[in-house]
Length: 203
Image (cartoon, rainbow, N blue to C red; front, top):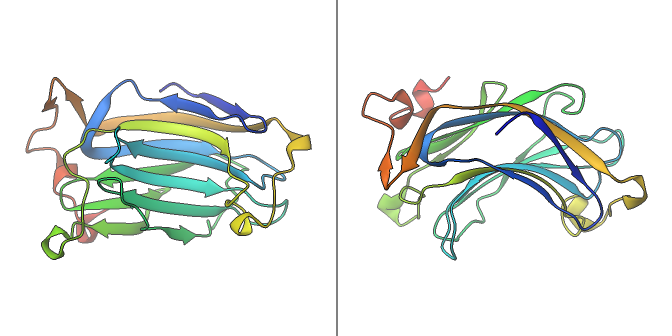
């Protein structure tokens, strides 16, 4: 996934997709978001498999009115079931410079980082019946799209599409610590540290 920009107009979606599929590991991407009035837009970066019972790990940045902060929205799907959202306010202006957003995924947990700071852990709790994504290979998607029915204040604030097109930029896609899936086999061996990394050892 080369460095570049995504541009979206009203009702249009811009998407970039990784060449490889991944099953576990750490994926990192730097994003610089839409400046000014970005209400109704979503700049997203996520890992997702295919099919009706897909697995997915999301980082979405929800646009807002000029001067109001973006909202960082995280979620995890397993077997097509999500509803595990957590939201955060970034402690920086994500439109001024590039910032790093990383997802560490292994059989024990999913950990979300921003600029190297851990912000969320989703643990594998299959022992109590909570589905966890661990068998479906995923691709990495970077996208920019219209979500003004929910993205800004629950859809109360609509997109200012007269100001389109909107552009978000990405660079430095890093999958060096991710496990490439090819011919039903993973490139990762037992020595890959990301496969056993937990919250108390994260960093």
